[in-house]
Structures are given as structure tokens and as C-alpha cells.
Amino acid sequence: MYTQGLDQKDKPAGTPQGAETPGQVEAFQDRIDAEDKIEAKDWMPEAYRRTLIRQISQHAHSEIIGMQPEGNWLTRAPTLKRKAILLAKIQDEAGHGLYLYSAAETLGVSRAQMVTDLLSGKAKYSSIFNYPALTWADIGAIGWLVDGAAIMNQIPLCRCSYGPYSRAMIRICKEESFHQRQGFDILVALCNGTDEQKAMAQDALDRWWWPSLMMFGPSDNESKHSAQSMAWKIKRFTNDELRQKFIDVTVPQAEFLGLKVPDDELEFDEKTGHYRHGEIDWQEFLDVLAGNGPCNRQRMAKRRKAHEDGAWVREAARVYAEKHAAKDAA
Amino acid sequence: MSDKEWPLYEVFIRSKSGLSHRHAGSIHAADDQMALDAARDTYTRRNEGVSIWVVRSSQIVASDPAETAAFFEPAEDKIYRHPTFYDMPDGVENL
Image (cartoon, rainbow over all chains, first blue to last red; front, side, top):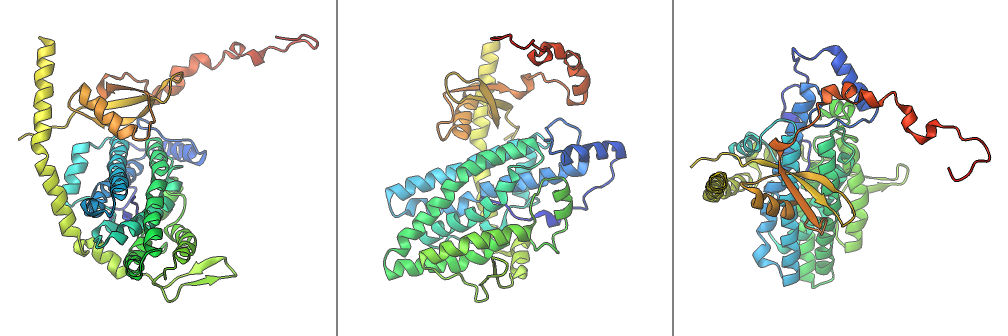
């Protein structure tokens, strides 16, 4: 899961660093332009490093917080099979968070620092996870739409110029398509079910459609860091390009399910071969980002509590390890 | 209660017998056994491995990327180490 253009909160990129000479910066850009991958200990501009730390850690946080809306349904999955599948998916999200934290750590930020920033509210995560999963159909919609949007975002990241991030994304993308399919599978079952079940699926689509489109981030003329990220080949497509691709592939899937996309202006444009869509409510996006979505406080409270509740386990493991290390040394 | 960070381990996985172990990523763990268990749960949820090595990241000695050119320079001018350096006369086979 994840990503969205959360990058608009950053300080201006490219703060001059005394140690960076124009020659170094130019040689770096030449490597990027030649599609060479940048590895952990290679020289890189400070702004490139900071951009990646911010993006990768936000991505990791999103995976971790993203377990919550789904975890909400674990004990109420309709069958044992669905429960086992959901459990496997949530475990994958935890795994994805871990791949990404370790990729971010190669840039010189500590795991403890990233966790502290998440818990203090300083770091952001994808705002899609601040929406509640109200019914079982939401679990279907999350897999289909939220993971679907994430895949759109993540596939180009497999070619990102930073090696450790690119490798983490390749691993994640391999696992992600299971997530999307299991979601669609849930909705197929509901849409072939009773009228009430189908209405539940429609309701989930109604609530998740627009937030899923917002996952691609602000539109291109509002997105401040797109150009630099594109030049660095961290990003390969703009927010609007990816959003359009997502709409183009997803609308026919909704039609297959017999569900109506909640956008009266949605229309296929024969000339361009793309769907035209209605205006996105960017005020809602900004509100959720600012902390005022339906579940922001609940998500953070739960994450903090989980961290605090686990403190004794971490402490015990550390003491045990120290005791045995001392014994082995003796 | 202290929240000191657990040490970092690098994870190497052999995907099947006959292949080398390959770097998969890293994890934090309090001790070696926990590192192995966590590496299994993190990196082999879909049978990606038949063997795992974990090693404390602090124990790895690595070449310096800033010195790459100089470090590998000795191999640069020895093209005669490659079979393609030698022109074989026409008519000679199995060589």
C-alpha cells in the first residue's frame, strides 16, 4: 500500500551545503541521467538524501498505519478462508514497512528516529488510512482501490534511481498484486450476492473512490517537488499521469462488478482514449492531511499505545541478549 | 525503561540449493536467533529461501565507494585476461 504526494510539506529542496561543489552535483546528475543506480554510501547531494529519507520513511509509516483499518476486520471476517487471507495481507504490510525502514536507514537516519517522528506526529503517512473501514465490503474496496492506486504509484518506483529503495519496491510490487486481487475477489462475491450485499459493495465504492484518487497527491500544477524528483529519477510520472492511468484501468473493473463510480462527470473521451473525471475536493485532502480526517487521532493513539505496550517486550529481549552475550564471553 | 535500538543485521538468502546466498535487506534484532527468526518472517513469507545467513551490519568490511576507481584500477589494463583478446587463426576449431 501507500503512496501519495505528501511531499508538499517539506522545506525548500536544495538548501545549499558548504561541502557540495558544482562539479560534484553535476557528476551526480550525469550518473542519474545515464540511468546509473545510486547506492547507500555513494556521494549524493544533501537534498537528494533528505527527499529520499522523507519519502521512504513516509512510505514505511503508511504501511504500518495501513494495518489498522484492515486489522479492524480480522475477527469479523465472514469465513475462515477470508480471515487467513486477510491475516496474510496484513502481515505483508508489516513486512513492507520493514523493507522500507531498512532502505531508509541506508541513508543515515536511524530506525528509532523514524519511529519517534511517526509517534510524535512530525512524520506523515498516507492520508487514505485516516478513513474508517466501516463494513466488510470496505476490506474489498481497500484491496481493490487503495492497493490498486498504490501499485500504480509503486511500479515506476521499482526503477527509482536509489538502489535500496528500488530493490525494496520490486519486492513489494511482487506481493502487492495478491492484495489487489483478494480485494476484487471480495467484491465479486458481494456483487454476486444478495441485493443487500451488492448495496454494501456500492456503498464502499462510494466512500473509497475519491480518497483513492487523492492518493496520487496534488495535481501537477500544485505539486512543488515533482520536477526535482523527476530530474533525480525518484519519480518517473507525474501525479496526474498516474491518477489518469488508475482511472482508466479501474472504471471498466467497476463496470464488470456492476457498480457505479460516484462521479457524475465521468465520461470516456473517444478522442484521447482516456476517461474525463470530475473535480477532486482538494479541501478534503488538505483537511485530512492537516490531521482532521475521520480517524487521524484514533490511528495515532492506537500506534502510540501499541508502541508503549510493546516496550517491556523490547526491553526483555535486550536484557536477555545482554545476559547471554555476557555468559558466552565468560 | 530504556528504548535502546537493537543492533542491525544484514540478511542473505539462498533461494534454492545450487545458488549463492544473496543480500535481501536488513532487520533489527536483539540477538542472533531473533535475527534469524525475524529474517525468515520478513524476507521468506513465500518460500523465497532454503537457507538464511544473518550477520551484524557492524561486522561487514566494505570497500569505499569514493575509492572505487582506484581500488579496481589494477584490473582495468589487463584485457589479455579475457579470451576475446586473442585472435584465433581461421580453421582452428575447439579453442
